[in-house]
Length: 323
Ligand SMILES: NC(=O)c1ccc[n+]([C@@H]2O[C@H](COP(=O)([O-])OP(=O)(O)OC[C@H]3O[C@@H](n4cnc5c(N)ncnc54)[C@H](O)[C@@H]3O)[C@@H](O)[C@H]2O)c1
Image (spheres, protein in one colour):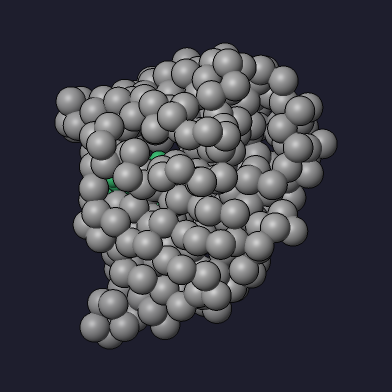
């Protein structure tokens, strides 16, 4: 089976690529080749199958077609401009998040067999705010351009699935913590920073109060879900291709409680109304009943998330930041 990861040089794309190469198969079928595609050519990796690394723009029809070549059976579409960046630059968000997804659909429909497409949508495609506990059939009413672009792409991927052009599963990912490396342009970046930076011995600002609640998952669990979405039977989804995976609803205070008192003291309250306005619109909890029935594993608690970060990413983060 040939697999393509669009956004294969990014945080989750890289983790997914490493899991695929460690496992060598997907859903019991041997992987025969992997294409990693990103704006800058992703670095290669040690794998028991050939790895093709391509630079390109997902919104370019020609580049998307190069990445999704004849024979591709599974496409992980992770390429995106993230939340705060898409809010700051409307044109860029539209081009990559919406027109990029259209280019992916166009490339897929040219293949002789419809590929499975796993699209990373987001909790940001919903509204509802702090008091919301969203049922599986909640409407997507995003309060930000990123979420609107994700929701629009989901609808078009569902229709393309109905038409037999491809076979999509859109995962509305929770905020993924702990992100390694440095803070990024996502409005949700601080949810990772308040755990990662203290573990590095660094101070970090907290833009919201400790009672603020957020729907999260770990990178390990996000990759589990991506792999499950790639190999599951999509028959039970019908025309509803959007899935709210079973994340964890947690408060900032509960997250900080997983740190030692000395680490916790490094987290400094610095209210930021702009960040709070974006993340405060996202729902803090989902029922996620359908996803559990479909076999998506629930997220474990914050201590497990922190332990996974220590095992998988802390040393690499220290090295990357010259510490
Ligand atoms: N990390 C999270 O908390 C989170 C939460 C919900 C949804 N998601 C979604 O999951 C996916 C992966 O997220 P991530 O955290 O790995 O983000 P990331 O920014 O690390 O990775 C996205 C990748 O897309 C690439 N990209 C951007 N524009 C491109 C273009 N025009 N052509 C080709 N590649 C392009 C970027 O270079 C980057 O490597 C994204 O679609 C994101 O919207 C992430």
